[in-house]
Length: 630
Ligand SMILES: *Cc1c(COP(=O)(O)O)cnc(C)c1O
Image (cartoon, rainbow, N blue to C red; front, side, top):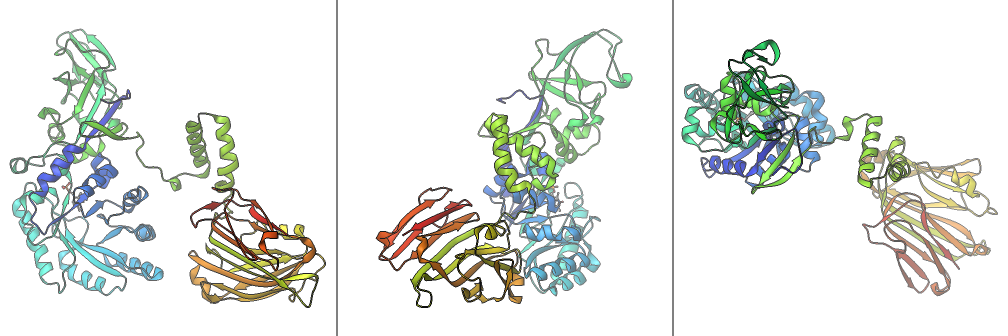
């Protein structure tokens, strides 16, 4: 079934997971929804796949331990509400807000910091108040709960979407569970509002506790098919989701009296055939299982003998004479009972939660659906987050990824050097682009300068602004103008004829706006360039946002030139360039020099107007343009 030869791997049976969800859902009443807990990579089952499957099966929310886990899901395009169950640090606030995560609130200081940040962004955020009703871990103590809730209500940009608490022993201590429930209810009763979500039950609580006054429950361990107590076993039917498997890597024999493994904790009392499996406690197969557990080989249970090493274990295979190197062994699985997580954990008085969240952590993970492999996850599971890496490492990662795809180091180097390094390695360079670029140029006869056409231009485009100012530059020589090509604060350049006196009269700004806000400007001659500086107090607040630029000028263009060039100097999406001459457009030739998705955008000619345009989602690369020859 597993296509590649892995040293060890986990199999995540999504059919079992969905079966478990169905069983647990059948215990809910009509007004109860469920949140799927996917913290700690869904208890070692793979947060993304588990989240997807749960959402498809009715989960209204996901629960994670911290904002990092929430961010990873956001990177993978999981867009549903995500609740952070543990208390967050104040320095995580920007990540929480900007990734649209829902924090839980256990203290006022954090709430105030969160509110301040949200006020600064003019943004509202949902929060869940976490009450400690007896767990004695996170959450506000019951006696201070009302004070905290009242204070949070008064914080303008926080909205209390939920109030929750957490059981300490819902699988085994029903009396204490009831006590916690009563405390929780008492607080809820004294509220004068009803939050959207009230929740207290973890998965065991769903089976054992009273939930009628809640409308949300949190599915964890039972959804992964692991029983938490005998009571639970009697009341619900679930199937283990995770199996962990490996292969026999060596088969040996030992004579009587030989020891196997570190510290000679196992000494043979009979001749023994045994096998080495390349899995140890570093794979999450707990050291405490030494000399205690069994593995399944060809439907027979084989005892682990000697100590679990970091990377290996030995198993007694005397019961399986036909065993061979390469045979698959199951170390954790759905049957028989001896190798389920709860029974393995019981062997050493350990925790099944710990066992499943650790086991297979350096193995590949395969997701099974309808008895087929749906997908797999690599050994190092942390999904690729580029900000995790320093630049040098990131460059290596990108380069090696391209090399692998193209199967040629030479071509890969070229692609990388020419494209990516230019775009990304040069950190000072902003990768910005213009959208809906519209440039209209109109020639009319000029009476005061008969040698020239009076030229009005209107430039409009959308772009993210990074400064609260920009420049428009005009020069007599192209070499002068070239100095401004690479500057990202220059939005428009005009080449004036060399015979024209460089002055405000010959190049006038008739209108300049950002998002319709008129801009202040002043003009300065710098060497032989006219620099026009634009700014406005009112655009400061727009920094970082996409805005609409609109710049109109009036100037003069020599009649003798017979050609006019419009350059596109930046990455641009969607172009619309029009040129209105005094002559009929039929006499004008168009030379297009576009690079991008299309080499030859559409040309529309009507009377004396020529229009060149692309659809608004078409990309044009820098150094494109068009020459009008007349
Ligand atoms: C982990 C966790 C759960 C899930 O608990 P299970 O016992 O695995 O069902 C629910 N709520 C909170 C707050 C948790 O931290």
